[in-house]
Image (tube, rainbow, N blue to C red; front, side, top):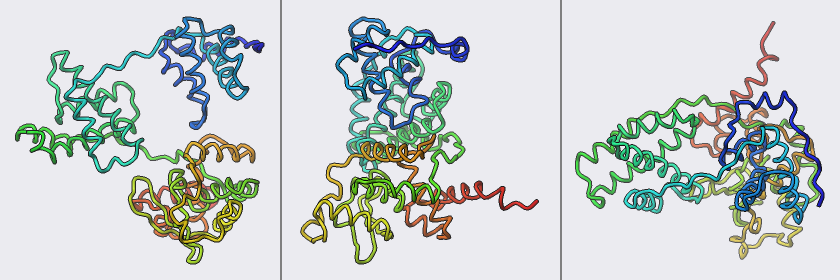
Length: 401
């Protein structure tokens, strides 16, 4: 396969990226590449595979290696790598080195983390467990590093406070710092509950209790997710020829379900007679009933008719509504239809359709308390961000001259 000639970066582009390091790890390079890409994009994954192949075969990241690597690939995998190559040239083709090997935790620390993640009742999903494992590993690696430097460090309030300052110095975002801090606090509480089993003395227990006093960083809550206007949602739902796609879009944008909640729906959760939809929320064990809107019922019914499951029967109540549907597939479906309608913009994603449902319910006059109940927010404060967003939208029109 012949490779298109890659244009050289202009002088202004090089100056704009002049602060870029001349030596990057694979992960650093891919992170820079992914900065301006949609979060659901698979471009970083394909670019990483290409870069790692170049390093493994000890060949430069250039046009020759690009042509050889993509010779047998389909076009949809070539495009991400071609875009990456343009980016790589624009930043001055820095030297790329493999990611450093992550040091292993000391056995005792590793066993403690694994046991906590295995037994913690609040960590129900694989993603939550992975996130907490990563956060706790980071903390204990910090502890081990301090000990090796001759500094006192342990699972205590003093060390956790120092760890937070370390994360701030490393330019971690306030959100990430608070997430890591929350993981350590949860571990400390678990250790206190297991104090007899772990053989902790009173001094160690007091050190663990001190961790709860460590304050997180203030985060300015912003509306990081866009939402559709009423006419835009109408256009989005008018397009899909696939009954399955329309049913998914309706559940997201009309009912306000999260992507994971869509994948968990069973036929027994659909109550057409009473107009109720039972939803198993994120990190929950019980299903909550919400209003099953008529337009959404129509879309679901059409999908059930197409899949020869209408009318519903009690014998099929445990059958999934969507067979083997994954959240990444939902994000792809949403992005596809948003792009087709020209609605894909920065901040617009599958989760934006949940924001759309809440925002439009408020704008139609539904009370804040009822929107909270429909979206199943734990606190009213979360729902109030929708009203703040609505206020921002109407501010200029409502203020008198």
